[in-house]
Image (cartoon, rainbow, N blue to C red; front, side):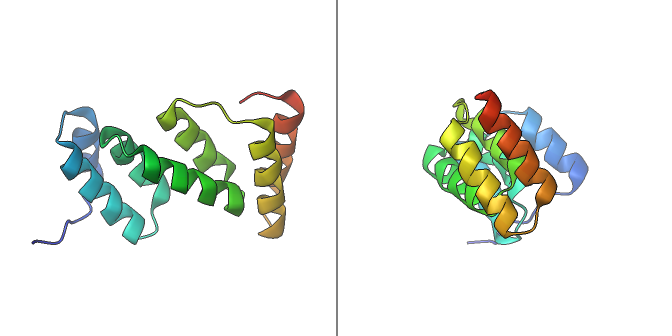
Length: 114
């Protein structure tokens, strides 16, 4: 089986905009994830209907305190971010030195909404 290549930016845009088989979308998402490019994988995980991978990546984003990725994953899953998740994301961000993300997560936890 041939190795899936990460598409160049223009090709990626075209792939995101068109229909594709879920298996192909998942292969592209996994290629991005293998390169540590989690944010770029989200669109393809959504196209692949890979709710289990989205949930796992969401847990990673919370643990890392990556508020931007967390929002993208919540949108992809169609599930709002709970206050507890915001609080956990704030703690994760603090532990990794991401003070802006920690502050944003705390604000969102206080507001109780995305």
